[in-house]
Image 1: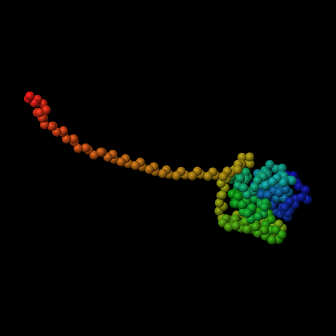
Image 2: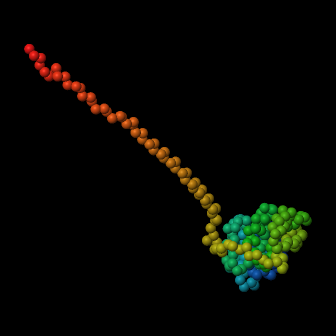
Image 3: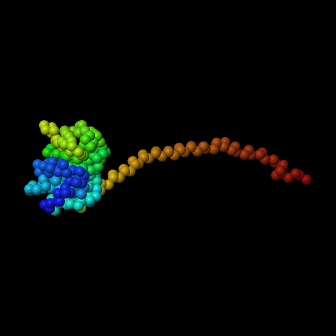
Length: 253
């Protein structure tokens, strides 16, 4: 592993006082770590890589909107994914094996209620019974980051996740894990894909409207009966005029 100049370690994001904690959690994990928000690479990315040294099958995914890294791991098991950490499209890219759950999910992105609540809903789909979550910046200037804590507390209401303020000095480090004794539900329904094969999800096409039932055709009017003209009375035979003899006989002279 390529070492860093001590003067820049942890300076990005004011995370230097938690570098050892992040390294220890990566070391105690199963070797599979998801990192949301890599920044310059000199903070959490570097600490996670130090913790993963010696793991026989280490796998580390860093996800960020932009590539701003000035230090990148040179290990085979590290990959940088450029994308939105709130998008479900990234899930299939970070889970090459359905049977393997991340041992650690580290979150250090935009510290708002809506952002964190979306990330929790998306990445819970790849978590497992032994997954530990770490959240940076849960304490800001000596007080709780209420936006972040409210999102976490709302998310865990109906689940078996439990949260504790692991470190409260600036800028805070929160931790979430599954409560012992509660069965862990397998929510993973995604298909693992390679990064090059990931395709954006198309919205479902609207179903065509169902055809209206054909209106019954009107029945043709029944034909009117043809009226027969009244029958004429039979003509009487012509009467024969009596013969007049004077018309045929000559008068005597």
